Image 1 (cartoon, rainbow, N blue to C red):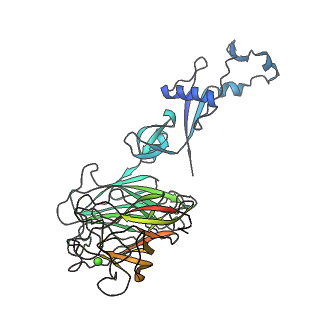
Image 2 (cartoon, rainbow, N blue to C red):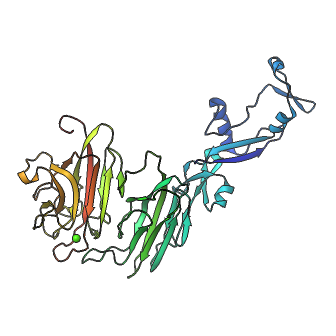
Image 3 (cartoon, rainbow, N blue to C red):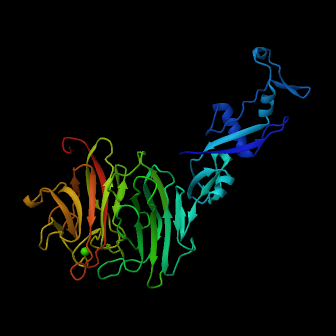
Length: 424
Ligand SMILES: [Ca+2]
């Protein structure tokens, strides 16, 4: 899929090419290494002389070479610089694609700094409401960005595959502040971010900066994915900047199927959408999978509630109950006050670490309540799961009041556990 950019320089017969300062260093580096980022120069031979206006080899060994052809002399007038259309970081810090100024302009991007040792320009694609894009790495921003947007309406971007082989789209929420859910049942009824055209994705709202989603784009080149920010209701200073990465099916960084979120690495942090310990509210109508890639030689995974720097009693895991008062952990799927029939985080065969398990909690799946633990405890615990692949499922219904009040959702730190006698 990689394309190449070409820059052609005219060179006089008497002077070496000097397009800019960067190229000098590239030439130097080239002479040392033979090539650099696929930028190729003809190799100048210092033993070439000029006689009667024609190039002539004066090294005696060169007498075995074929005499210089007119074509050779003509080719020496040009230097073609070729570089791949690889990823680059622009002067603004945004990610772009390295290409020539002409190509960037014709594809609707804006040049933002140099790449390919100064021969290419880092081309950034940024677009807003009512447009469509086929460019990998496009940023979808609010109207008026980088200013905030305080108005109502619907802002839609159509994402068209850049190549038929693309089967996933990753959305990175570099900026994501829209109005949060209403405070009774935590439903996103004022502002919403909606994804359509791919696999079912829950509508989200509120603050989601730093979070991400993977959208299944299906096979074939039809069915574009649409991203829509709906804004309504009260005045609110909204801002969004969503980076859209198109992922070919054949890549190793593709997410597993059925994963709205996909994390890699031995350790990391997972948050529900709109999680914030001070003011965030757990969103209703959620139903999605969170996947953690099993790293090599790791057989289990432990989860621990994040630190909560805001509240006296941690709200880092508050999924059901009134979290303005201490709420114990609840487990299981049956009816009753200590079960998780409505909202839950599913941790396959979860067990507390370093704590004796009561009989009913040797291995539990659904966890809810206001404490993170695999048993009915007021004390939060580190929870271990050895079910593979490593996945969590988060589910909420559309009701909170009057039983469930001020729940924040969850923030968990995870650490994968090496394959030892204790973790199989
Ligand atoms: Ca609920």
